[in-house]
Length: 204
Image 1 (spheres, rainbow, N blue to C red):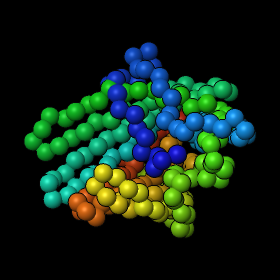
Image 2: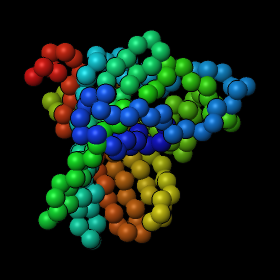
Image 3: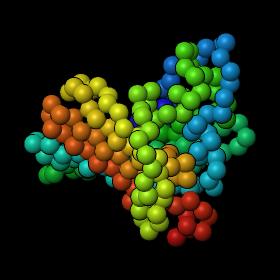
């Protein structure tokens, strides 16, 4: 659930045998709660294996800029789970590029709701998120209809405003994201720069 920014940092290869498998960080489940379809499984399982997305995030403030490139791909899927790979590269001016290792995250097809959470809230990008409308966003060369969410989070630098454009037709659902931390005047903008959904596009 949180922000959809949960790109796991970790091996520079998309090979599952070279990457550790981790579970998403969620609250302990309440055994009295029903099992529901996991939103990440629902999203990723609709695509072909090896479908991938690359997002580029520019973070800037008075101290300079940081460019973060996140690649995510569908490593494997079956009726019980999906395995989603993620690899992050960080670039800073006048510094060597840092290509982090990749991890594979396992999302089960069914998941028991976290304690005290209802199903509608579980499917939001954040418990604080409010849907504020819809908007068509150009992704590479295709217009995608998105739902827009806005809310405020708190981080170590203070309150941070979040605006998120989301679509179930996109792996990982994030189409665009804008973050702003007032105390440090830090702005972060993230967009999709590459999208491969089918076997034909994967081969290109």
